[in-house]
Image 1: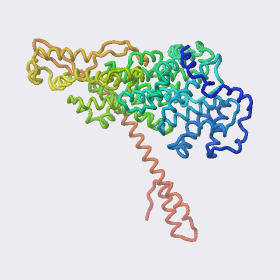
Image 2 (image 1 turned 90 degrees about the horizontal axis):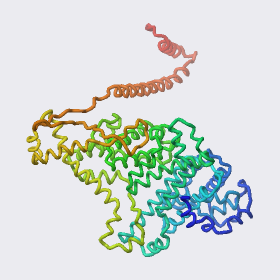
Image 3 (image 1 turned 90 degrees about the vertical axis):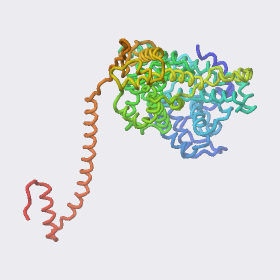
Image 4 (image 1 turned 135 degrees about the vertical axis):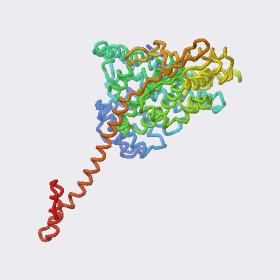
Length: 589
C-alpha cells in the first residue's frame, strides 16, 4: 500500500507511548461526566464546554453539531481567548476530557485544529512542525490502517481543510527547508532537519493522497457519476462512507495543487481526468466554495503555463462569473475561507488579464467590465510591451513553487555556484518571460494590423524598423502562436488532448507582397446585455418599492392616533385625508 512508508516511520504508539490502549481500558467513562477536579491548568469555562461538546459530537457522529462547533464556535473562541496564542495542549485537554472512550481518536483531530491554529496565528517552531507531521501520520494511519471504515462523520468543510492544511504545512516546511540555501537557518534548525530527513517528505505526502484516492475508489465512482450511473455500484464499504468518499475527492484536488506547485502541469491536469468541472461548479457534490476556487485557480494556471490560453481563459472566466453570482452567500463562510477566496479571486483576475493580452477573445460582459475596472492600466501597459508589468503580474498571480529535491544533505554538498537550481520560483518566471519575449513582436504587429484592411509588407516593415524577411518570419510566428490547443469535448472535464483552433481577433493572409487583414471579432451578444439591464431595473424597482412601503408604514401610526372625537377639526382633517388616500375621487374645499 501507499501508506506503508510513513506508517513505519511514525506509528501512533511511538508518538503517545505504548501504554495508550492500557490507559484507555483503565478509564472507561461516559462523555457527560463532570470535569476532573484539581486541575493544574486554567482553561476558561466556555472552552471546556466547547471541548466536551466537540467530544460528544464526534463520539455520537452528530455531523450537524460538529459543523456548528467547527465553523462557528471554534473561530469565536479563538478570537476571544487564543487570538495570538496556542490553544491548550494535549495534557491540558486530558485534564478536561479525561481518558474516555474514543479519546485517542478525539485527541488526533483536536491536535489537527491545534497545529493549524499555530500555523495560522503563531510562528511554528521546528519542533512543532515535526509534531504536526507526526499527528497527521497518526490521523491517516487511523483512517487507512483498518479493514473496515472507522465510525466517524465530519462535515465537508473540515474534511477539505484537513487535506488543504496538510498540503499547506508541507509547502510551508519545504519553503522553510529551502531557506538553508541562503543561510537563514540557525545551527540548531539545520541539525534538527538533518536528523529528521523524512519530516514532510514529498514521497510521504504523495503516498497519503494516493492512498486516500485508492481507499475511496473515487475515480470509479466519478466515472459512473459522469455517465449517469449509480456511483455506489462500484464503491466498496469504504467508498460508500461519506468520510472516505469526500477525502478521496478532496485528495484529487490536493494532487492538482501539489503537482502545480512542483511545476508538473501535465500531471496536475491528468489527476482530474474524471472530474467534470461544470458539475464540480454547480453540483453540490463537494459544497465547499474554497475547494471550487482552488480547483479552478490551479487548473487555469496549469493551462496557462502549458500555453493553452484559450482553455485558461475559459476556466478563469467561468469561475469568476460563478463568484460574482454567489456574492450574496459568501458572507456565510468563515473569515479564513473568505480571505483565501478573495486572494485567489484577485489572482485569477490578474492571470486572466495576462491570457487576454496574449490571446485576445471575448469573455462574459460582467467579468470584462470588472477586469477593466481593476486592471485596465495594467492591460494597457502589457499591450504596449512593458516586460516589467508581465513580471509583476506573474509574481502576484502564481502560487509558491517548491523544489522536490531541496534537502539539507544535498544543500550541504552543493557548490556555491549551483544553488540557483533551488530557486524554483525564478526558474518558473524565466520560462514564462521567455514566452513573453517571443510574444512581444506579435503584440506590436497586432496593434498595427488593427488599423488597416490592406497593407504592404514593406510599409509594416518600415513601421517596425526591421527587414521584410524578418517580418515574414514574425507573421508566420503570429499565425503559429494564435493556433492554440483547446479542449473540444463538450463536457467540463479538463483534457490534455484537444484540437488546434484559432480564436484571434485579427486574421490575415499575404498575397503578392500585400497583407490582407480580416477582422474576425465576434459581434456582441446584445441579448445578454438587455437581460442584464432588465434584471438590474427589476432590482432597482424592488428597492424603490421597499422605500415607499417604509414611508407609508411611518405615516400609518400618525393617522390612527388622531381619531379624537372631542376635537372636531382634527377629526375632519383626518377624515378628509383618509378619504383622499382611499378613493381617487377629488375632494372639494
